Length: 375
Ligand code: FAD
Ligand code: UDP
Image (cartoon, helix red, strand yellow):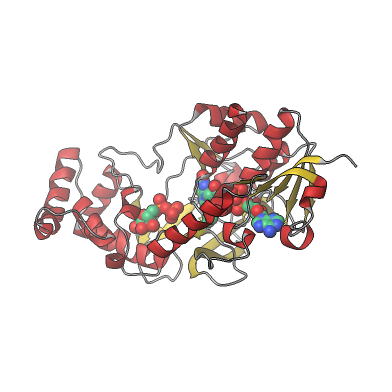
């Protein structure tokens, strides 16, 4: 049989987009995945007519029009806008921190009132720093939004999520949280956001249409030694340390586990995402999946709903590797592995696991598009 141009390991967004672009360029690929299904972490399982985000809730957002047009050419996206709500000891607050949150927290009505309140709240922390930069997440949060917001909306949530005290976490984690002096609950600043109509599986199906795929196949047991017999090049989106047999040591990951259940009500929490920001609940948030794709009356057309409690979990063997750990040991080790990839001439290392870097979906697609533009 004629050789494939590419053997693609992993059918997540990196692998699937690569296969699609390669096909457009006239190349043949074989895509394999060790999971029983295609799609990597964006795969959804249909339960009670609802697309359940099995590997974590995924919201597509980007500022890149080319990427947005590309994904919409595969499947049209809906108008879902992420606007999570925080529940702190039974009281609800809008996120991200905006004029609604400040009103709920302090009763302030105008930006001037809110600014004055925030200034008062953070004064003590700023004075304590005495001119130096915040050196940890707690200091960063206290000097950014002050005491009340830190204590009610940040401290416990962050400790649950990262399993560490806010004083022992890097400041940059919190810089991602936008603060808005307008009444706007849209979590993202990007121009475009949404969910594929019909779910993420439609996006993956569209990308992989007409491409040969095998699921339930592990690269290391089936192809590691002989892939050159079947393909000219390898596109590898599995874990970078595993590719090299962990010869420099193992990289650490942070993972999340989900407790998913069906509820016998059409509308459990009225929002896709509710964060639980105190230690009263062991989970960080509850996802109600139908709200990503059902709006207005259609929420009630389905009498049931599916919810997932999300627990941040220490990574152990056999768990899903989700988030790279950004500490010195792991950054240095990952860099050493990245150096090794330069000797693997016929191999392209891509995606989240293959590069040991956290990427949102859009940047992954952008990377692949750029690779083919250059070619
Ligand atoms: P993956 O989707 O992980 O795909 C890699 C594939 O490779 C997997 O299917 C795996 O089974 C396969 N594989 C690995 N090793 C082997 C092997 N040895 N043999 C065969 N197959 C193998 N991004 C956003 O833009 N918005 C969000 O809201 C968002 N939420 C997220 C929530 C969570 C919990 C996580 C973890 C990520 C989230 N992301 C989000 C990021 C998004 O998941 C990634 O950008 C995307 O999955 C990257 O695709 P990928 O192809 O690199 O990796
Ligand atoms: N965060 C918080 N309270 C919230 C939501 C987020 O304190 O209700 C903090 C938390 O430290 C988290 C960071 O903001 O790690 C980034 O959150 P985001 O939801 O943007 O990132 P993700 O959880 O998707 O990594």
